[in-house]
Image 1 (tube, rainbow, N blue to C red):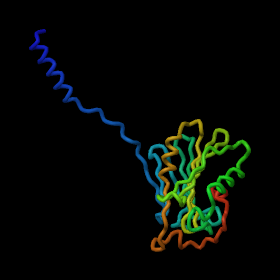
Image 2: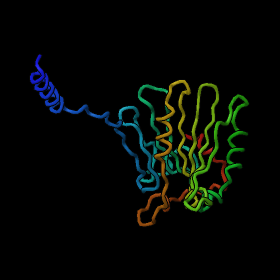
Image 3: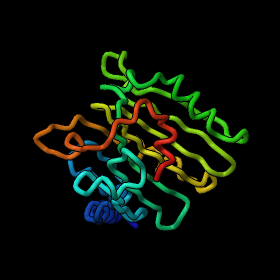
Amino acid sequence: MTAIAFHLARQDLLRNLLLLPLAAEAAPPKVFSYASDDGAFFFSLPAAEWTLQTDCSPARRRLECSALGRRAVVTAQRVSGGGLVSATVDMGAFGKRLGEFASLQEITAMVTASQPDSARMLDASAITSRSGKAPLYYVLRYRNGDSERVVKLAVQQNRLYMLTVQADARAGLGAEIAAIVASYNVFPVSTMRGGLLSSDAPAVVRSSPLDAAQRT
């Protein structure tokens, strides 16, 4: 091949490469978000992997919830198994903010004391406000055998909000579970929207948050 022919062939090759479509980047998994009727809390789940149902909500009668003082129960299951999510709201005298209800150390002690000896606490942390002083959420992660559970809780307007995620520790769902927990957010509720603030549920004074988490 002459130098001129080689040069032309090289030009054709480069031209053809430029015309090739770029490989499409892997699209992020689709998620769907659940928001309570009154806008008090929301979280997101991978759309293809989870199914969700509302067991009771602010729009329905309080008596539909199984636990006294409970105002909302939302559950989700992983389609292929190995994962369960529940989001609950409990009415009562829990305080205006999380720090008034209990410290992280107190919450950790409650959880530890209520678990069997075989369970162990893996991590307990607080997500704070921008000032770094007031805790907005407590996140606890513990394991019992092959079952791992993450609890994220918050307090707003005397209501205890809690997201509980339980998963098979052998299923390799760590990143998925972390994303679900991170997506959970709680907001104050306006009386203009009705819902939680208009509930006639009796006060439950400083009820154990773990007990609330276990009531489904």
